[in-house]
Length: 185
Image 1 (cartoon, one colour):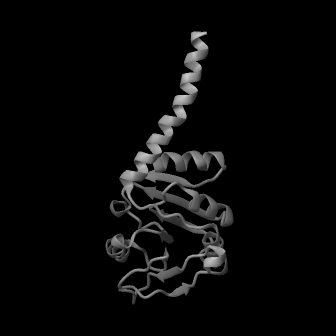
Image 2 (cartoon, rainbow, N blue to C red):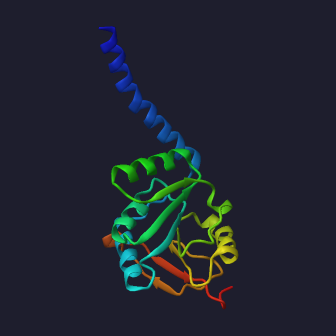
C-alpha cells in the first residue's frame, strides 16, 4: 500500500515540478518568440527556390526547438543547429528532436559568444534590443555568401537583399533576408 502511495506521489509530483521549472525558465529568460508554422513553410519555400536548401543552418535563440525541427523536415538537406542559453529550453528541444526523430542538434550557449563562421544560413527571431549586437557579430563572423534571416524584426544598419511580407491571416510574419557579400557593411 505504501509503495502504491509513493508511486502515485511520484507520478503526480513529476509534472508539477516540470511545470514549475518551465514557468521559472520562462520568467527568467524574458521574452519568448515563436516562429509560426506559416512562416516556417514560407521560409522553406524560399530556401528551396534559392541555392540555400542545403548547408549549415544556425538558429540563434532556438527556444524550445519547434522552428528548427519543423524546418529540418521541410528542408532535410540542411544540417541544423540551435543555440540557446536556457538549460530548460535546450532540454525540451533535445527531447522534442528525439521524439520527432529530427537530426537537429541543440547546444546550450549564449549565441553572442559562439563562433558562427561555419554557418551558411543564420536565423534569428530575437527582441529588437539584441539586433545591434547580433548585427555586429554577423558582420565580423558571417562568411561571404552566407545569408542571415530575421523574422518580424530587421537589422538597423543592414539593407536586406529580399523582404517577404507577411500575411497575418495565414500567420506569416515578415521575413528579412540579408546576404554577406564583399560590399556588405
